[in-house]
Structure formats: C-alpha cells, structure tokens
Length: 573
Image (cartoon, rainbow, N blue to C red; front, side, top):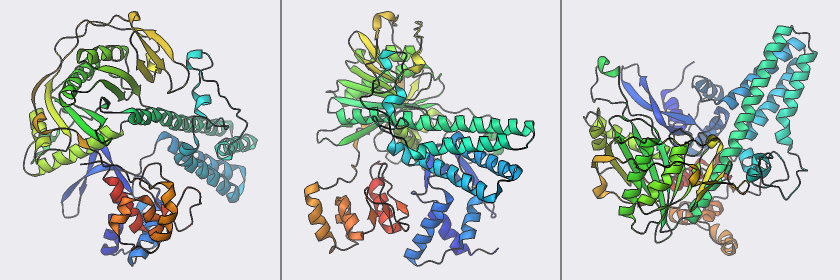
C-alpha cells in the first residue's frame, strides 16, 4: 500500500496537535528514524477515540481543500498506535470478548453479538462523557445523587439525609447492568463445559468490579473537586490555596552520553507546590515553589519541612497573608496523622491560620502540579540541548533559572531536615478521611466533602511534637520571582445584551479576531456553527470546545482552533 509522504505528514501534524493529545508529566520515548536520527518524544495521551479523530481530520481537510488518505488507511494507522487503557476501559474490552465467545459457542449469531457490543460501547461512552455531567449533589436518580452515594448509614457524623426521593431511573446507567445480566443468563443456558463457564464468569465478575470502581472514581473525583472550586471562590488578598505533589524523580542527563552513562542512574527528587491567590483586582495569580534535593526521604518529616519553608516564603511575598488552604493527593507522606496534625503547628509558627486540608481522589486533583512539571521539563530540555549537562541538583536549578527562568517558578536547592520527629501520632481510620477543617481546639473531619456534619476530633487526643523540622536552602532564584497573573477565560456578556449581539453579530467579519476574543457569543453568531447546551449536536458538528466543562461543538476546525488559542492562554508559560 503506497502512502504519499505529503499526505502522511499532514495527518501526523493533525493528530499530534494540542487538541488531540495531551502531555503527561513523566516519561518519554525515543524514536529512531531510518536515517539513524533519534527524536525524543514526551509521553502523551489521546483525548479522542480513532473514529472521532478521523471524522475531524476529514472535516478539516474538506475545509482546507486538502486531499486526505482513504478512511481505511487512516484507521489502519491508528491500529499501530498504542493507547492508554485504564482498568475500567479494559473491562469493557474483556466483556466484548466474552460476548464474542458466548455468541460463537451458544449459536446466538452475529446480530446478537453486534447488538450486545453496541450496548457495551454505549455504556462506555456514557461513563467517559455524560455521567460526570449528570452526577450532582442532589438528584432523584440514586446513581447520580452524591448525597445518597457518600452517606454512611453507620455513622451519623458522615450521614446526610436526602430531602428528596429517589424514584427516577436512568436508562443509560441501567443499560450496563441489563446487558451483563443477559450475557450471564445466555452463558448459563449454553452447553459449554463447566471450565469454560467458570472462566467466562470470572471475567464477567472482574470486569463488572473494575467498571464499578471506575464509576466510583468518577463520582468521588467530581465531589472532591467541588471543594477546590468552593475554595477558589473564597480566596481573597489574605488567603492562598496551595496544591502539593512530589514530581517523578528527574533522571540525570548529559548533553552527550555514552551507553555506560545511561545505566545505574539515581533520580533527583523534587517537590512541587503551586500557590493560588486572588490579587487586588480580583484576578487569579499563581506562584510555584520547586524544592530540589540531592537525596531525601519522601516522608511526612520532609513534607512538613517543605511546608514550613513555603509558609515562610509566602509571608515574605504576601505580608497580609492570614489563611492557607492545602490540597494534596493520598500519598502516605501527606495522608498520615503526623502530617495532618502537625501542619497546623507549622502554620502557627509562621503566623498563619491553616483553614482546611483536602485530599483529592487518586489521579483526580493534581492538575496544576502536573501541568507546571511539563513546562519545567520542557524548559530543562532546552537548556540541556544547548550543550549543558544536568547531573546534580545545582545543575537542575541552573537549568530552571536559565533563559530568564520559568514565569512564576521559585526553585531552590534544599538539604533534608536533620532533626528527626520522635513523636509518633496514632489515629485510627485516618486513611478514610478526605476533608479536614482546622478549628481552634479540634479538627472537624469528613469522609466526603459536604456529606454530614463531620466528626470532631480534639487536638488533646494527639501527642503533638515539640520541635518542628526545617529545611536549609543553599541557593535559589527567589530574587526575581513573584506571583504571576493567570489569564482569565473568556467572560460572557450579560444576558440582556445577548439579543443585540445576535442581531449585530451577523454582519461582523468572520476574521475579526479581536471581537471573538472579547466575548464568547460573537464567536457563535459570526460563524453560526456552534451548538449550545439546549440543542443536540448535529452530525457535522465534530469539534468539541477545548474549555473544560463546555459541551459546545463547532462545524469547522478554524473556529475550534481559535477557541483553543484563547483557552490555552489561561495557563501562562
């Protein structure tokens, strides 16, 4: 099969664009070309399935007047690409395999197999898309109601009585259970051997468990993200939200490496903290703290020392700072009794009030840290490719500070805390806690955000340490770093002006980018091709809005690309 190099390059440029793939904060791959040239490519993940990408590409080619390759060729290219599958997505594939085997051995025929596969695919698409939108704090559908899902009937402190009935039923949620039950009934009624039945039943049970775990993750992550949104609304000039995360250890690299230099490397540990505040003009601002170590233990003692250093530096930048909010994942160094209880003491030593500590669900709340880690690694790669080596923490700091540094990033080399915390704090059930509010004499804890009144835990219950760990910084780039403003997303005009915009916008020039950037509705009116919330997506509306949470679709790639440029400015580099 002959493929034109021009057509292939055109297609590869499209599928590697920012609206198709997203960078991962860790890992890379090296591509070796036929010319023996090697290209380093960061690990990425596709945001669309191959069929949707092919449809978008054909629409893009039609718009730009380019002759694409045949559809079968485009699909064949994707079969050579490895996608990233989670357990939940892989479970649907396993169920499809069971359907094929049951249909073949039970004589159900190809129509039955095709029907069940379509039902499984429909259930999978629902979990990946609409389920997160349908789930809410209060709903008459039990599968969508967070109050009902997260309430613990065995503990009144974690119980929230719903003020509504759960009488409705979601057909799309029930679709998976019905198709799995039908597959099991067909399998039991077949004349397959007992060994085959046991094997397929095991696959069905495991797949159902993985899918339910995926569904639970979507529900938990959405509920925990509500806490972050509420905190961002409450931020003012005297408060700040800090997101914490340990980045993947950076592997030392030389500008020119021999094969022997590649093996037996020891990674450089570095910790990332993103601080968000609201400036005097109510605009969101961001500052990032990067603590680099030659070697350290990623334990609660080091985390507390890092917090102590961050609080001290924030007081220097924000003298008016009074309250801090902490958000981190469920790693043991964060989600342990010692870190939770002692963090309040660390804040008080620096003259601050620790208002809340919240833990995100697994892989569901470290977006700012991961995004800035990608930016820093790209900046380091530029320094490395300019002929420098990065083998130590000091060289890594020099790489981050090179070329005027990364906007809003304050990096420093630190030595791990020397004085150990001899106090051991025991707290039974601490791993089940997701949200913590620090009061004067006690902690108020929840298993899920806003579910129940919360349980009161007095500080007198714990044996708090008398000495707090601290870091010693040898060098940093703090002289030229401060908070940087975050570009806001496009703000819609008031509702009263919408009708006037709809009448006037039709006569505007489609290429008037300034008007499109200033308001969201001109883009809809000028192009006449976006689909709002109250209308169904037409068959030719292929390009989804890149703004998270928006469900608009566009008929042309140029409109979607313009929107992507505006949204991309939300995170400054």
